[in-house]
Length: 231
Image (cartoon, rainbow, N blue to C red; front, side, top):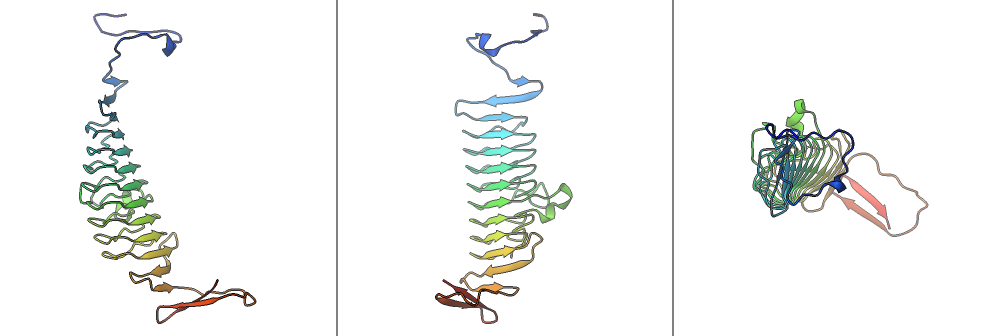
């Protein structure tokens, strides 16, 4: 023990169960900042103070609102809303006052200009990832006040701004102010099936089935294409 340096060196194996201490206090371990509070918040590697019951891990990880979970460099960096989840580099970085958003994957929920903090919508779910050189095409990158959007895929929903209630599976970009639509697309964004706000369906390709199948037959049309199904 070097009292002048304030260091203790242990050689060999130290079993934590053999350590008895009334109070063990550490602000940092090997340069990693540890911050905890009475409301069970913790932060590692970030200088942003976590909100109550929040966990922030990574350089610049943020989340000053209640119940934030941010894992990754700059994940949730501008977030002040509550109960948001951001996992991945820059994930959810541009979410600000929005609540209960889930952003998973590198740059998902980050505006193209990374320093822009502009996402105020609630209950959005975005899963996807792009490289740092392609953030303009990130999943939900242009979202502002839109809420209740659920998108899965690289770049999915990237053109949605104020639109709400949309579901996109695949790499389709979406439309700025779409409301309550459903899109199934290819991974590269080719739209295959689309339901508009009124539930009208548009599809591409040919629908085939077993001509010997018996049952109740239903037809759905958007005025141009017709979908035939059996139940």
